[in-house]
Image (cartoon, rainbow, N blue to C red; front, side, top):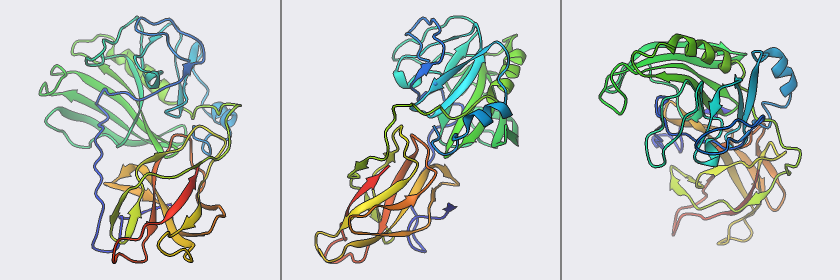
Length: 328
């Protein structure tokens, strides 16, 4: 796939990445492979349908530290190892396997999430290379983690935000399929275990893999995508997300223009998150016709965020509205 701007020359769809690596908003869901007692809620034990086809080979490439256990987050499509004896908890099911700490901790509803020694979550953008009002950038380095491209970062809070001045964060944002996963530690100023926690993060980042597929998962399913918007000669659907399934493609079928029943063909492309330089990553255009399924994108992981776009043939007397099914 290649990156390009949405629409025809001279037009552009600007999408802003709103979740910073340093933010503590969490999105996750699944079950730890081995239950861990936690204070706030029973811990749950943690896909990249195409990227993790050979998970055994990946595991052999990056052996987990001894005496660690694996936590699996299926909805957010990752799994990670953490030290045995550490604790994890969450409020919402999707937040499983996102925070780990050497001692028991609680998450108060409707409050800020506590700082913990190990944090794992999906993010929408790489960490900032420059200092901001809220954080000073101490380290920003491109690297690789178990063969995956990554950015190693470290920041210190200025005190202008929610964190106390001097609060440190250290870790990696690595690419897992179409997703970006942050593995980092967060420590208040004066925390004597910060250096040890950084070592844990270094090890944990090497254990991140796609969540193993469920044996009961189904194949591709069809949906009628939600209406989107028009810009630059194309109409885009609303945001879609692939389910947990054996399906690894995005396809289109049952293409029809209600205003012109004889027109049964349209040109489609798919745009995937995360944003890169303010833009989605788009597939090459593919023409789909009639009721047959036409593959628009391959090697698509579970829980991938994307939208489907089609070229319009006319905008008068109104913008062309094409009906079609998406299989994912």
